[in-house]
Length: 522
Picture 1 (cartoon, rainbow, N blue to C red):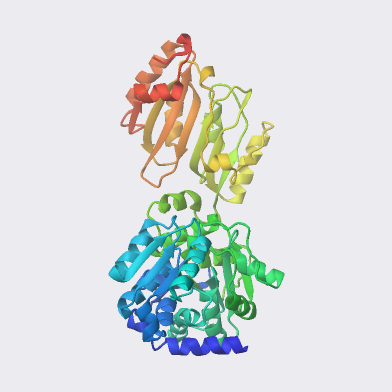
Picture 2 (picture 1 turned 180 degrees about the horizontal axis):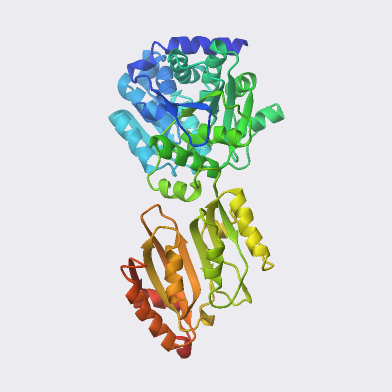
């Protein structure tokens, strides 16, 4: 062990005597993941006193301060969880804490800081990033002569985080063959890897970073700390632009490998945790599992290996759940969510025919289509299936000289930008329909009205409910066809579809604008 590792090991030993004044040990829980033979355990830091691991380092650091230092107060910078740890410690130790947070910090984390700290805490919102808040906090601490409580690059903080690893070692569930450790600044990874390597020398400690957050991996590659020009903040708990000095040295010495994960892989990991043990951690809290799933899918893990991942936190704004659900897909029998853009001739029944190309067992998750002034149309289908099923779809299309384009990562698809040329629609009617969320239900509706209408707009996304909802635009060759279709749609209520209604006049005017009299829908 290096001298720095020896110092960190001693810090963890001493921290064992302090941190449990404010929190209890968190449990280990085995996760059963479909199709995965490896034994996977999760360290449930989301069940700690602040729903994240950061209380350990913050309290250990502040408990070591002299009475004079605590009397003057402390300063911290945080995107959320470290601030909660400092707030909890300030309340327990009876000192004042000034916590600088980015203005974009989710309200759930701001409110939690206030709840844990009470009158002992003052929140200062400043800047649009952690780095800006941190710079302001350092200036404030220097001007006022106060102690700065670093979130990661301090041996006292790292020592507190290392108590997490001590609990794992003492649990009797080890040794583990692989441990996946999230990296923001590197405090968690440094403290835990130091402890695991001491007691289980054969354990592979793997650092996990987001694709656009990999400051530690960059530092390792460059041989020095290097600042990222851009930092993605979807996983806000690990969004750090430059690795710490101490953590860079320790991670370089202790970590066996680095894995970077995409936001979509993180969302998929959250979905896997919900499906398996019914928890929904914050994005950074699921990064370890995302890295494990990536390694498993690429055949890097033996089935007999024993794996540990850290659920590092669960302080997430509720509104973020919708984004996560829309980007998660499903891990089931090697099925993946892909968005396919398929060329289609402009004539009646074409989109219905394409829906019929989808093989049995493939789940339709999303449809984005609007008719444009073009000989070929390009609807987008979000489908959940295996590689073999995607190959089957392509084989069916090739019979007609067509090929599906994978647009899964295109921006217009992600933001559901559905364009259409309303001036080229003939007697259009827009319906909102609800239908049973089962294979073939929408096809039944389209077959029933297809003799009268041509589909000109289709906006549908799977919601996980027992009913599906779609905004459907139909156009007609004549007013007589339009009126006949309206009557047929009314007859379908309660059978093929559960509910149907046309857009209100105000909404219809916004959707269709001014059209020529012969094409006006009403």
